[in-house]
Length: 185
Length: 185
DNA sequence: AACTCGTGACTGAATGTTCACTCATTATGA
DNA sequence: TCATAATGAGTGAACATTCAGTCACGAGTT
Image (cartoon, chains in turn orange, cyan, green, blue):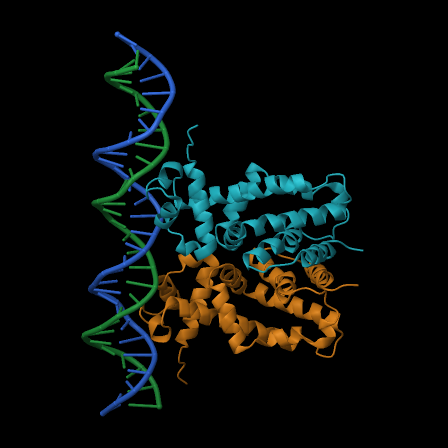
C-alpha cells in the first residue's frame, strides 16, 4: 500500500494552524509550506494565490464543521433540545481543534469575510438548512439571520478562539443562554 | 489662534481606519503615515514600533467608548433598563464610526488580543465598573465574565463590524435578546 | 525688537529583510 | 512514455525601521 500524501490538505491545515497561532501577517506562504512539509512553490501548483488558499481553507473548515456536527443531532427531538445539541456539538468540535476557531474568528473579522461567505453560500451549507427548519424558526425572535448567528454560532467560535474553557456544566448553561437570547416567550 | 495638529492622534486614527478597511496586512506603516498626512518616519517619533502603535490605538478606542457611553446611562435606573441603555449606547457609538468596531473586531481576534487586554486592565476600564455593580450582578446567570462579555459587548462590536444595519426597533430587540441571554428567570 | 541658541518634532531617502509569486528543472506514477 | 506534481533558487515589490538633516519655536540675551 502506497500512502500518497494529500498535499493540498496539508497546506490548508498548515495555513489554518499558522493563522490561528500567529495571525494572517504571521502566516507567510514560506512558513505555511515549511509547516506543511512541502517546497515553497508547491502551494502554487494547487492554488492560484494566497487568497485562493485562504478561501479554500475557509470552505474546508466550514464543511468539516457540518460533517462532524450534524450526525450528532437527533432530528426528531424538540426544537430546543435540537438547538442545545447542535450548539454543544459545534462548541466541542472547535474545542477539540481550537485552530479551527482561531482561524475562523480571524477570517470572519477580516476583509476576506465577505467574499468567503459568498463562496460558502454558493457551495451551500447544510448547517443552515438545519437551522431553518420551520418548527425551530417559528420559535425564534424576529431578528435578522445575522443577529441570530452572532448570538449562537458566533459566540461558540469566539469563546474557543479566546481560549476560554468551560466545564460540561457551564457549557450547558451557555447553550441555554444562547437559546434564551434567540427565542421569545 | 494657532491650531496645532495632534499628529499622534492622527496616526492612531489612520491606523484604526486602515485596519478596519483593509485588515492588518493592508495597513502598512507607509500607508498609515500617508493617510495621516505625515512622513513615513513620523510615527516612530511617537511610537517605538508598529506594535506599540496598535496597542495605543486600542486603548484610545476603548477609552473613547467609555467616555461616550457612560454619561448616557441613568445611574439610578433599574438594572435591566441600565443594561439596555448601556448596550444601545455602545452599539450607537460604534455605528456612528464603524471603523472603531472594525478595528476592535480584528484586534480582538488576533494574536495582539492578549497583550492588548492586559494593557487595558492596567489602565483600568470604567465600563467594567459599571458592569459589575452588585444589583446588576445578582441578576446575571452564573457564567464566566468572558462569556457575559461575548454575549453583550462582543455582539455589538461584531454586528457593526459586519455592517449589519438595524432599525431602532430591531436594536431594542437585540438589546433585550442580550439581556435574556445573560440573566436567568 | 532683533538675534541666537537649544530642543524636540518632523522629514523622506536609504537600508536590509521578508514577502508573494515564478519558472526551469526534476521526480513520480499511471 | 507522458502528463502532472513537486521542487527550490530566484525576482521584484513591499515592508518596518533608521537616521542625517531640516524645521519651528520658546527662552535667554542684548
